[in-house]
Length: 299
Image (tube, rainbow, N blue to C red; front, side, top):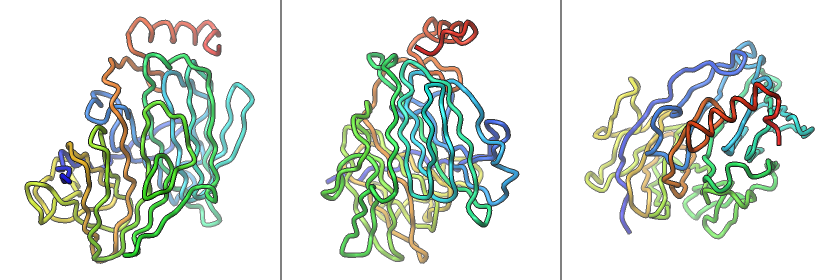
């Protein structure tokens, strides 16, 4: 087994999206080839309703899949095809935009006004850019959770892990998406297919992600947004991008650590995008925008 070295560490930075939702973005837009097949990752975590209630009103999607995972609060969603639904704590929605939809997402807090969730964008290969849109709405109770002998807990959202199969199926990037909680002081090895790009996003607790060249560990907290691959502790809202290998090794700190571990097979295709419309060429992108203006975007 080979430990995946830490290639880069990123601190999520503040952004405002939709009609004024304040969130933290770990990566997105620009050159995302290191994350291929993934395009964007946002952490929307707020305790003030004024920071999220305006939501994400009607907007287009084409050529991508969006993955929404809610930890706290509710997200109401709807689209131009008449689909409606609600995501609560622990629920997941995997939306394949394909040929195109108009979509809206309106977050609501819990009884204390708290809202917390994540959204990940996955690219679609050229052969599936114009596939019919579809949804996979998964309730929390349907997501398998497995606990190892040392107390490590894993919720398996997508992919096969520790003998459990996640409920989301048929996704083009064949990803693995798991929610990992490692108890205080525990050292844990987690297998990741060597053919995949992989990253971890730490959102609670702290710990050390071990590096092949430095088994004592690598810092996963970079408060200034800079690389920090030669330090010792991890931190909240830190994204760790891994190099190649077939396992990730983490040492939990005094409070334990909780993170998302996401991996997928790179598409290695050209990317042309404008907001939530992602195609392979500028000509395809111009066509999509022309269709938006002409009212022919929805197929």
